[in-house]
Amino acid sequence: MAVTQHPHNPGWDRPKLAAAREEVVELFTGSLGYQLLPGPESDPTRHSLMAALLGVCSPLVADPVTEKDILAVYLTCHGIIHEGTGEHLLITSDINPQYLGSSLSTRELATMMLRGTRVRQLLLMLDTCQSGAGGNEVAAAALSGLTSMWGQEPEAGMVVIASAQPSEEAATGVFPHLLRQAVTVAQAARPAADRLDPQALVREMNQLADRPGHMRIGLATLAVTGAPPPFFPSRPQGRLAAGTGDEPAARLLAEAERLSRAFSESGDRARALRLVVRACAPGDPDRAERVARTMPEDCQERCEALLEVAAVVADADAERAARLRDVAEGVATASASPQALVDVAEAVSAIDPGRACRLLQQATDQVMPQADFDGRIPDNGPATRDIAIVAAEAVRLVGEDRAHPCVTAAERVIEACTCEDCRLTALVALGRARAKRTPGSAARFLEPALTLALGDLGQFGPEVLEIADALRPTDPERAERIEADALRAAEASASTGFVADRQRRAAAVTLGPSAPDRAERLAWAISDQYQRTQTLAGLAAALSTADPQRAVSLALSMDDELPKTLTLAALAEATDDADLRTRLLAEGERSTKRISAQDRVPALLALAKVYEA
Image (cartoon, rainbow, N blue to C red; front, side, top):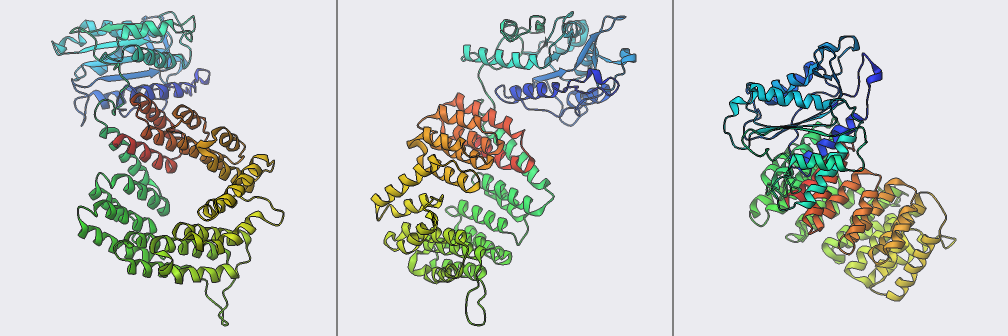
């Protein structure tokens, strides 16, 4: 809990306290494995702070803290010692400087959490000025009778860590930083122990070079039955290392589904729920199907989701898979989406090629421009791209012979198209598809594509590298020459703009792990943030096995939080180092808090997948 604003006295405002709270939350919910409980609104008043704590501690609430739970409370705000009573007071957002006596005392705070509740293991962190006095008050209050009802319950006890001594001021944001450092050092030094000693942690915090000289961390301990409770696990746990890896996966998956259903725009909601289905289908196909059936009946994403479930259950329940594919085909037809029809065709191509051909022809008919009265195909750039993609998929799924009607239709549209960019995209798609099935037949698409890609001035467009890759099976020497020329052109280019960025990105992807220094230089030369970050993400993935340290460094350098989180999740999934995986997942979860709700969904699901695995 943090109090950053004071309407009655703006001079007390400390906006950086919000970041201090987040750092403590990240530490405890990350490597220490705590669960974040509901708290008060930002900048709590005296009343809302007490209400929030009662909502957690009171035995009258639905799910209170019990004797078995370890409760850690962090509070950062202004703190003073009252001149008349000598009590340590907490300055909440509603306090008027003229009526400081109405402030909540630290003793009251502790009394509320302990008296008449089932709280038996309490860690209270006071990050306020003169908080050492508050820590002493809490211990005194506990000794005066608050803990007498604890009896001989195992590991019952309380620890208060204060960011400053009774006569000292606390520097803003220093306490969380010192605590994180001390925990990291202590966990590394004692990996075999089950817990860290709070006294040793405080000693380490006071010895750190980053601690301001005027600020000494204080400790008050009341361990009724012996050693303090295990407030600080020695091993970096999260819930993965603690042996309950499905818990964070379930938590992240539930959060992703909650966010998805909250989107007001139906398209955004469908796309997000589609990702949820993909994430939960392998482990819980029944849940995935229920989610899929809540999506609009005529949307492409519902079709894709049903096919995802069908693929998962196919081996165990062929009849159910067939039923889901039939429903998906109905959705694809109703959606008028060529891609949805292609998706269904892919799902049935191995078991029913004739059905796949029919669906592919249906998709082709949907994107085919209508001929005029003379039978001529109109010039239509977008349709040229779309029909070529369908034809390329047809070649991939059912082979050239069966795909012939789709390819013929695509050729007619390409011939009528005057947009060079659209024609180039179409020719490359068909040429690459042919090269993978029957390399010798690809040249009639690749040669005109290469002419378009080089342009009138012989400049190398980004598609040149794709063409070179497609030519490799039939003419490897020529492919190598084209590739080398294209890479040199990309590295030497001083041009800026979208096309130049695409050229550098294509070159960086091609160089990849074979020449990571050149690839990284190209990536950082890309001006567009999205293309730059995507290129760095691809390079990090390519280096995940050969040079994991560099891969992690690249991921952390990204300035776009979504691809950064996705890359951290991919690296965590690829590594065999449990400690590195824990750190990557913790950093990934921190990144999710800095992105929009729409982008947070795929980020949460990527992390959940790693936890579940």
